[in-house]
Length: 290
Ligand SMILES: [Zn+2]
Image 1 (cartoon, rainbow, N blue to C red):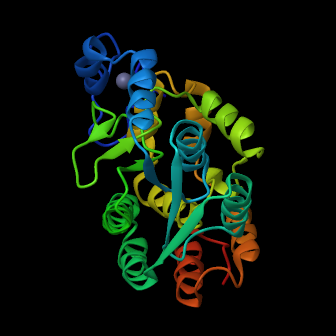
Image 2 (tube, rainbow, N blue to C red):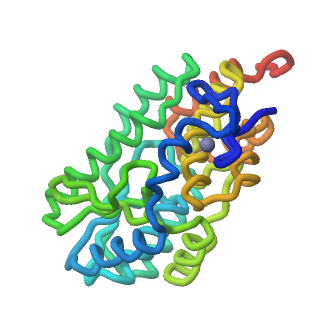
């Protein structure tokens, strides 16, 4: 199978074209301008230190917990903000409770499940990724809540490839706190500041129950993972190893997904459970039963 020689993205992913040297277009375009991770980290820390009070968008996954850890280390006051999309695994809620207790900070949960459920009901049956619109909806709600709280900035667990600057000019400004931090360093931050190990759950998710189902359904239809461009960018930036990326590009197995549903019974809305069961049925192929 053919991959980009630099970032490892498989050539079968839609929009990927390898040149005669076996390098994809994104690598060819971005490699001459790749930011220095050390400088990015310093810039992010400087921004955090200049804030008195920040809100951190926290969903209980590795990235947002690492952002929370970093904010807690460098800002005087931190407020945790969680958007309840109905999709969080009980383990993610447990981590959020532990983090709140450990840091002794304020925690606000924004509950607005319906629009998210409608999004999943629309996109999953069509084998479309819900992730882009979902994360934009989450960010809008966080920015709104942060503005109401009157904080100096909203801190998120995003990193490049989402932009070239760790600070996004909004009201309040958004600090993408994971710019420059490798996955290993994120683990260390969470271990040191929060005393926990946010392990991957079934299907390589660390918090969202919908993602593995969407990945499997999409893979069934298109033969590749919609996460490929994002993960390849992580490799290009040096945040993630190629081998680990390839492992995550494999669709989760049916047994794993069944297990995941079992773990979340009672934690996720009934409507969502129904959509996920349907998705499993249509993605399972022959012999998936019913
Ligand atoms: Zn590439």
